[in-house]
Length: 351
Ligand code: MG
Image 1 (cartoon, rainbow, N blue to C red):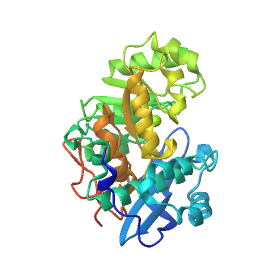
Image 2: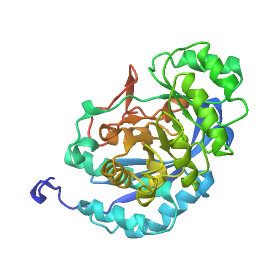
Image 3: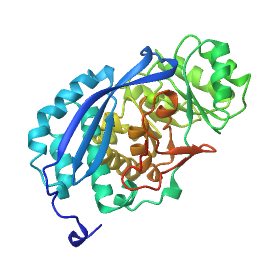
Image 4: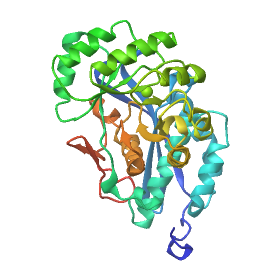
């Protein structure tokens, strides 16, 4: 940890926060078992003080009743109090934000990211250096292929040429058609995500064991999030690692999952930010679980923020920025499937 002597002086002028809705256009219509859409609205937050601007982003998850518009209101409500706070005590400020409401996790994430970006820039460090991480430890990331007609899937798989591992959504009646379409154009290892789509534990076991024969190396969230015992039952009858996503939102969710799942998918937007994500990684590791960092459909602000934590995890699924056509920033890059963190201070974003 840095000593107090290394900390910058209190910002001379009060910090100013802005919050706005940013519309992200998707390259392909995105379909999961939950929804289908051509764009996503996310929340953008900025924090400016001492001539330095920190940026944050959060993608409100519709399932939890969060929208970008509500996120703007949440940040605006907190702004007068935030503007009076001493940014040196950013850990305390983030904890205060986390306790301000029972929800608003994506908005909390956007604030947390903007604060980390500002603090790291002010100290002349990349964000990962605040935790003492080595950017060379950043893992491989998968590239997600959305559910679609067979010819579109084949085209999407060809576009993902550079990625050594692909992630495919399953959990619909079309699973066999989708997996066979992918397999008709690539032999790459596949990770699949059912997004709670399997209706019974017997169906889940049957499908997962078939998926294993198709070269699938992990399965994410086979059944509904609350069905912990069913997932324990499934895990005893399959051979590939099972990852919790919808069942794993925040730090307190992880202990009860330790005997039911092999790994957890941590997303900054549902956790409430980087501090929460860091806590989740440490809890999961301490329970002997593997960890991955996932994402929502987001621009390079949120994806680069998650990538700053990625040297701590086993595997990443940080491709949300690659699915949009109007990314306002550049940050983390993917080279031969591996996340390459930017070298700049803070998040390291460039426009
Ligand atoms: Mg998932």
